[in-house]
View 1: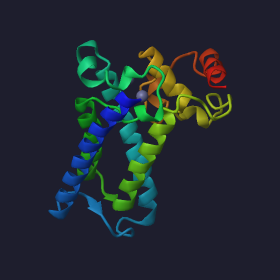
View 2: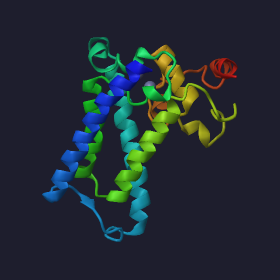
View 3: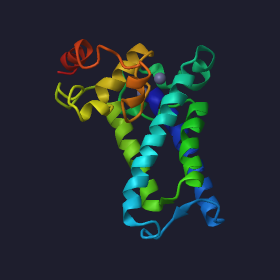
View 4: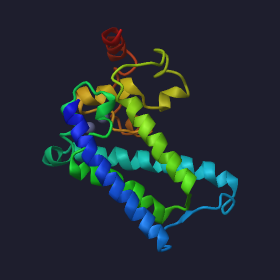
Length: 202
Ligand SMILES: [Zn+2]
Ligand SMILES: [Zn+2]
C-alpha cells in the first residue's frame, strides 16, 4: 500500500500539471471548454459526458494492451501491477510514463470535443470513483452482476481483480465492450473466480 501511495503521489503531480496546462490554454482561448450551459443545449451536457466516458474507455483499453507488451511493460505498467490483490490505493498507482499517457487523454479531449466545465469535472470525478471501485479487491454487487443484461456491460471489482491476477484478460476501464469484442474477457468471469473472490472477502 505504501508503494502504491508513493506512485499515486507522483501521478497526482502529473495530473495537476495537466490541469494547470488545460487552464492556461483555456485562458488563451485555445480549448473548446465553455462555461454557459446553454451554449450547446442542455442535452449536450449529458451527451458529451457519455461520449467522453466511451472515448476514454476505448483509449484506456488500447493503451493498456500496449502497456502489456513485453518490451514496454517494465517501463509503463509494472508499478500498477505490483499489487496482485489491489486496494483502492492501487487506483492511481502509475509509473511516470503511464501517468503521462493517462493524463494525456484528459488534456487532449478539451481540444477535440466542446465540453462544459461541469462536464469535465463530472468525468474526472466519475473516473476517480469508478477506478477506486474497480480496485476495491472485494465485490459488493450480487453474483448476478456479470450476467444481468444491463450490468454485464460495466466493469467492477471482480472484473478488474482478475486483470491484476492474470494480466492477459480485462483491459477495459468502465465497460466490458472491448474485452468482449476482442476476446479478452475471461470465460471464468462470473463463475469460478467470482465465487472464489467472494469466499476470500467473506
Ligand atoms: Zn488496476
Ligand atoms: Zn494491466
